Image (cartoon, rainbow, N blue to C red; front, side, top):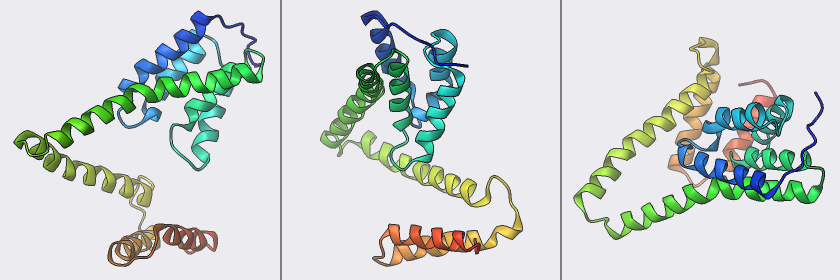
Length: 193
């Protein structure tokens, strides 16, 4: 399927912007959690992207280093390119990224300032103390899923051992985490884990 040739009006750009503004406030867990709604809107409802363009944008951004939200920039870029110019592609990037980042960033900033001003309040302290175990549990569950691949294959014990050893080294020494990542990459490349 070939890319659609679009001719955006200011109303279309505004529609793209406001849709990403709304998604920003629903993106608990990051922008990636709203991918299905983005696909519904950009591909199915508006026809601004083909299914292949959408899938390629998400896959390319997720495979590259950097923040998780990069796929939104690629979606905006492809919408703009379908309008026929590099300038429109740049506009698409800016509109999509500002739309997805602005509300959640302002909200986070305001809440953080309020919490800092009211850090001595019992409710704020209780919230922070209550959230700490939840955050640790979410990180541990993510680590478990990554280490086990969603299963409990006993042949994966070298990976588990490496994960525990890496955590201990990072926790108890001043070795930078990038050295641990490099060591894991080397061990994976030679087939030990």
